Amino acid sequence: MGNSENEALLANVDEVASQLRNLLEKATMKNLTRDMLFSGGIDTSILATIVAKKERIRGFTCTFKEANALDTKYAKLMAERLNIEHYMNPFGEEQVFEAIPDVVKVLNSFDPMEVRNSITINIGLRFAKKYGVTKIITGDGADELFAGYHMYYRHVGNKEKLSAMLEKMWGIMAFSAGTLGKNLGIEVVQPFLDPEVQKFAMTMDPRYNVQEERGEVWGKWILRKAFEDVLPPEVRWRDKNPIEVGSGTTILPKYLATKISDSEFAAKKKKILETDNVTIRDKEQLIYYEAYREAVGVPHAKDPDARTCPQCNSNVADNAVVCPTCGAYPIAAGGRSITNENAYADNKD
Image (cartoon, rainbow, N blue to C red; front, top):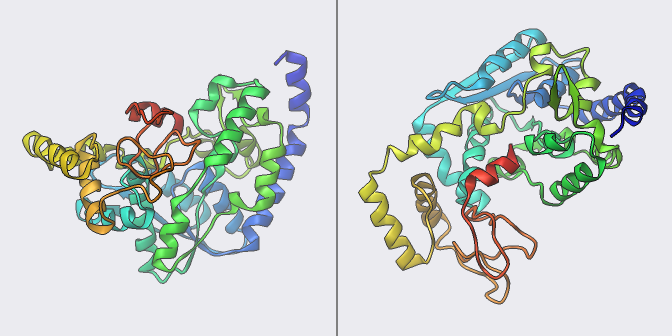
């Protein structure tokens, strides 16, 4: 994008930011509740500034106490700033193992990344339920709609590539909080996924999402600008961290690996392949699979004539590159797959 084109785009930034702010405020007020799953990230902090105008918020923050979770610092900062009634739940191993059967059963998945992220959400919802919560706000959708993930940054200024990547994301984006909440009798409110907010995000010039400022490239740039007067710099310019990083569950693969010896893992992996025809990739996935097998059963194709995952035999959509059941990535045409969770993670960060 040339300098003149960029200048023309940025000349309208105040108007675009104002429109977005108005839409998000209306979406939040439409189904208002004072209770929030609160990470202290930019998304939940934005929603909190809106809710705080009408209600004293009850914020619920859950972090894995075995890790140095980033959310703790930022959630405390924003809780003090907005006078939030703040409840912290530094959960441990016991709560993790209590959550795993629920998560794999409700989501019908033993995909390590999906389960790892959803463990925190499940624990957070259960924690909030103890305080009588029946309706709760989450920040779901902001990263998907407004290019929060790092994979977008390399295309700063490129309208065509940003559009193509975002449209692909919009076609596959899904969020576990609603499903997990429904299982617990909690209504999950997601203002960023309000139809009017989604429409705005999907028709806005995508270059407003990814811009350079302060010598760095930022995703969700238009969101940062829309609420820059109400967010402290530490939060406004907080980098994007996936749920597992913010909550600390990013250490779960190594942590859970200490619970199983190498010889036990090798024996179980071999037996599962022989008896269930399921490929287990690591010790973390083994723990999730054992819970899945007990709660759901052996994965299999409900439609044997349709496309199936080569690692777990579950049906997958024709255009899928990730198996939603086991997390195999990428799934290639013709039944092949290459297991590379790091590549998958790069696309989710």
